[in-house]
Length: 71
Image (tube, rainbow, N blue to C red; front, side, top):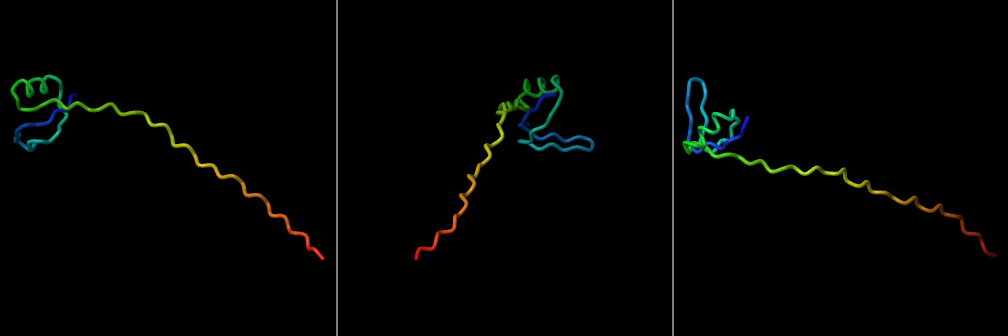
């Protein structure tokens, strides 16, 4: 299946596809539409694989030591 962007509207028995709509059709139909200037091929950009974000680490707070009373 190939995605194409329609350059004109298509109307049939039970369906309506508007110009500018991106539809998925079989390869033969896509070739015919493109050859007759009824549609243009849609090139999907490759999606980059994202690495999971680094987890924020928090340092443990130092324990407070009670101050010694001075006399």
